[in-house]
Structure formats: C-alpha cells, structure tokens
Length: 425
Image 1 (cartoon, rainbow, N blue to C red):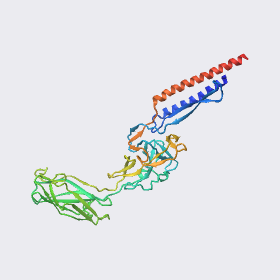
Image 2 (image 1 turned 45 degrees about the horizontal axis):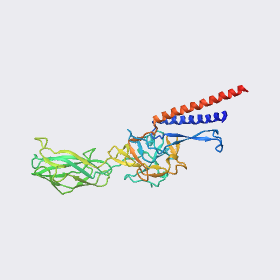
Image 3 (image 1 turned 90 degrees about the vertical axis):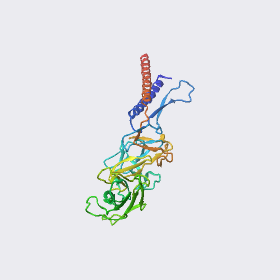
Image 4 (image 1 turned 120 degrees about the vertical axis):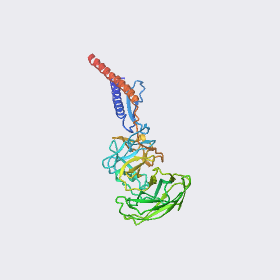
C-alpha cells in the first residue's frame, strides 16, 4: 500500500467521521424536540480492488445514516388540552397551509389554536381530521384518502340550544305546615330556541302527609311580567309516608306541556322527577329548617335544557376525537383524528419541521381511526418525547472525535513521508 493510498483512506475516514459528528450534533440539538426520532450512523468497509490478491489492497470507509422512525418515544403528560401523543403505530396527518395542501406526516403532537382557530403544531403544520356532526357521525365519507380530510378549525363550530325535557326536584315540604298552607317555588326552563323562561310551582298542604302541586304558565326570565306560554298538566297529588319518605304521586308520571311559546319555539313536554317511592332522594316531608316559619326547602332543581352556547375550549378524548366545550355546559365531538400508518415507516423521508413524506421504501399510507387497523392510540394532555439518548450520543461523539483525530494523524504522517521523499530527490 502506497502513502498515496493511506492518504486517500484517511480522507474517507475524515469525511465519514465529520458526517457522523454532524448527525450526533443534530440528535443532541433535538433532544427536546417533541416526537423527534434519533438517527444512527452505520459504517462499511470500502475496498477499491476487491479482486486483488494483495491483502494490503487500498480501501477506506463509507457510511450511511438511518432514522428509526418506528421507535416509540416516552409519552409524558402535558398541560395543554390540545396536546396529544400517539401510543403505538401511526402519524398525524398535517399540511403546511390552511388550504389542506402538501400533506405530510408527523408524531409531533404539540398543537395549539392560532388566531383563526386552526390547530397548528410547533412547526406551523395544520392538523387534518374528519369533521363530525352534532351526533358525532362523520360529515364526509371517511374513504381512507387524505382528500376526505379537512383542516381542523375548532372556533368555526357553534353550540346549539336544547329544550328542557326533564326537571328533577330535591326539596323538603314542611311537615310542620298547617293544612291549607301554600308555598311557591320556581325554576328556569328553556324552549327549543334556547330562550329562558320561569315556571312557578304552588305547593299546598291538603291534609296530613298529603300535598298538591300546581303549575303556573311560564313567564319571561328577563321580564317576569310577560307570560310566554300556556301550561297544561297537574295538579299533582303527593302523599308521604309517616317517616317522611315519598309514598306516591298521582299521576305516577308527572308531565307538564307548554304550548304557544311567544318565542316561536316548538311546544314542550317536561317530565318531572319527584323522587323514588319509599325514599327521600327527591321530595321529602320533614319539619321545616326555618322553625316557626315553615317553608319549602328547595335544595336543587336540575334541568337538561340549554341556552345557545359560545365556543369555549377543546380537548382530545380517548377515542382520538376533538371535543368542543361551550359556555352553556354543552360538549360535543367535532373532529375525528385519523392516524396514517405505513408498511415501513423507517423508509419515510424526513422533512423540515419534524415531518415525514412518503417514499417508495415506506409504501403508501393507510388511514384508520386510532386503535383500529394496526394504528396506535391517541392520548390527550400528552406529548411524545424525543428518542435521543443523550448519554449514548456523548459517547458516540467521543469515539467520533478520536477516530477523526487518528485519521488526521495519518494525513500528517503521510505528509511527512512525502516531504522526506522530496528531500531525498
């Protein structure tokens, strides 16, 4: 082997180790990058004349880097309701514009809402999902193609109003009231347009352990002087046991029908839950807590109606759905997040912003709901950590530095040999 060959071999070593150091530097720089997958360098011998019988035939080293994209990173809890991590196979589908073009795939689930309501991750990529209707069903056919996806915009959704159909009472009627005494309580109820109304209830003691409940016509909650509908139902006969628990109601099912809403809403039927017979979990009859001034003690009156709600925030549920919450207490899923899986995820092409592009080596994508078709699960309030092992990278850096220094010494020695040769001529 000539000095010239030694110089060439050392040059390939310098090139390989400098590239190795660059890869190590990239890994260390991304040790805190959400969803980053560490790259590894592999080296191979390079023989310039593989058919030579000379055991000292000149050679060198060649190299290649691989990124273990399929490796699972540690899933850690996060503070944002729109942060999400993938536990298992798959990638989020994202695009680099709000128009849903130039699709890419990522494990970086640190999404937040931008000024226009889009869910964007730390690299500026827009999350894609299948929109859901108010019943949680897909609006468009989830045909397995990215063309069926939409850019997720959480602020574009609006809440809805709901008519009150059920009201439940937890109240004590005063056992120490005189026969003929009457008391009035009231509750709020909503029509189908979400308009608030107030209904009064007259409780009259008709005998020992017996009461009668009557309903008033609803009035406007904003202006109680305005009657807003016509009530039909009642009076209800209520009987208590000697121990103060509910004995019976007549009728057994208490319904109130309201017609002619002045708001233009549909007629309403409200079913009342007055408690369980033989128990004091709804209505009860015990001595009044007011002592000498008996009164109906209305502890709670629950109802299921809703006014129109404005969007408040969003979170990710265990099914990988984006759930919107509204200021009226309503919650409903608005998007399903699919996961894209590949036959060979390590064959994906890495792009800027911790995203990947499909290649011939990776194969084409397959879209599935989380937990189906080999896809992993989406976890809310969580992020996937980088797979970089800092201690390993520092060790590899020392080895690369030593190999680089050794190759540099070979070049220096070869230079000395050439100098000696030139001096001898």
